[in-house]
Length: 62
Image (cartoon, rainbow, N blue to C red; front, side, top):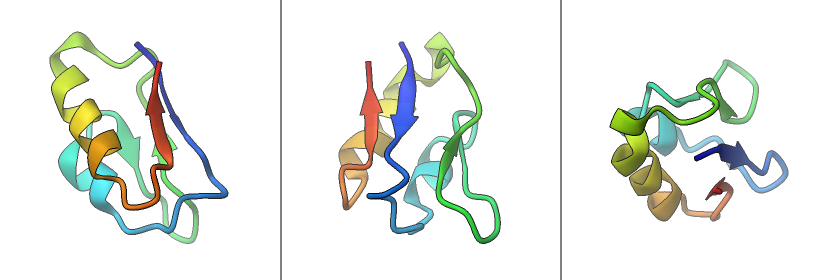
């Protein structure tokens, strides 16, 4: 499974890296980024939680 972040939709709230730091980071002054591609199997539930919790639905898993 792969994760993507729609950088135009990301509002930098910091929720995704707090829920799944193995997959998402929030660099200073930038939008959220995916750092694990593909998403490791042990992180699938957390990554899905981050996607489901994103206030702007900027994260997609495919």
